Amino acid sequence: MQNRNVIITGANSGIGKASALKFATEGYNIIMACRDMVFSRNVQKEIIDISKNKNVYLMQVDMSSFNSIRTFCSEYKSKFEKVDILIHNAAYFNHGEKYQLSPDHIELTFATNVFGPFLMTTLLLDHLKKSDEPKIFHAGSNIIKHFFDLKTKIIFDNLQGEFKDSRSHSVYKMYCQSKMALLMLTFKMAEMFKDDGIKVNALQINGAKMSKRMIKKVKPWWRPITWVQNLFIPPTSYMANNYFEICTSDTFQHVTGKLFNDKLEIMQVAPNEYPGFFKQVKRVLGSSFYPTYANKKDVMDQLWELSIELTNDHSIHSTLKS
Ligand SMILES: NC(=O)c1ccc[n+]([C@@H]2O[C@H](COP(=O)([O-])OP(=O)(O)OC[C@H]3O[C@@H](n4cnc5c(N)ncnc54)[C@H](OP(=O)(O)O)[C@@H]3O)[C@@H](O)[C@H]2O)c1
Image (cartoon, rainbow, N blue to C red; front, side, top):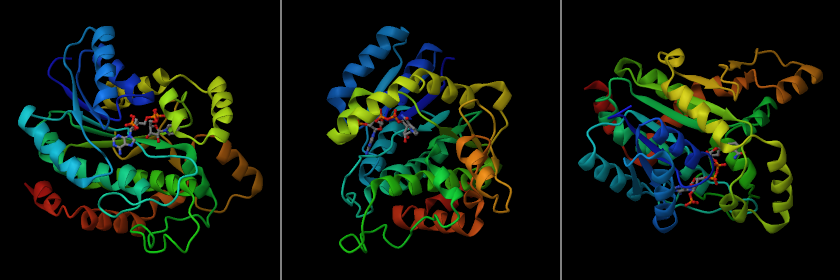
């Protein structure tokens, strides 16, 4: 697959690393978009050695910082002619951490998992449009199942530290909301980018073996749980294959605006009525349906507008028209 460029954020560990290896082995040009250059350099070497593909590049980016993303995109554009596949894999989730603000004064989970990816996508749109089959991919999570509880919603009024000292904070809840927001942006982007032929899809990840690097980030008392979890969940290569299939297979060539489960089935929105306890349990355990909240058009539009406002990237309107 010569001359097809794949950007993978967070490609130095876990599923991102396994995906970089998979795409490299299949002959794609890989751009590992990573934060820690010292650690990532060794991973880059390892991927080149195993895949025998020299076209594995490493570029620095901190997905929580708009400045860093802007620098990354302008350097990328000076080096590469187009983007064929943009994989938003990096995510922030550190158990037990307090409310933190990004360099742009945005809650860190949302900055890294939602607004950073949004900005990178919008800045690379013109380069995506140069591909004959442009794809954007979002790494989702089954944590959004919490939204089957109809009381759960995205809390918009504390994303810039408004109540950081007066409200209790849960990284877990923030992560859950950020993954729902990313899914909603998947749907919205698919609609907005349709005329430009850019396909946008997401994968609901139920679990993949956590890397040593990730386990080190969780609180010591949580680590035994992750070790036990790791015994029962699939290896990262399984999810990497799913990333690859969704982004490259002929079967999904024309698919856009969809959420896949880990069996590569397209998930459906749950029927609207409140389902009752047993159906609710089935829904939470199964992977056929996603919560109706994800299709709320008013929230989708609010997220879209807020993403433009916070990233201060109004160029998207002109890029989409041209
Ligand atoms: N593993 C699972 O069971 C599971 C379940 C559901 C969803 N997911 C999703 O799958 C994706 C991959 O997860 P994983 O399990 O492979 O996690 P991981 O091993 O911890 O990898 C996360 C990657 O994101 C990078 N990252 C975090 N913050 C960043 C930032 N500000 N800028 C640049 N890179 C940043 C990390 O880089 P550093 O090395 O610099 O920290 C790391 O490379 C994530 O989107 C996650 O939410 C995973």
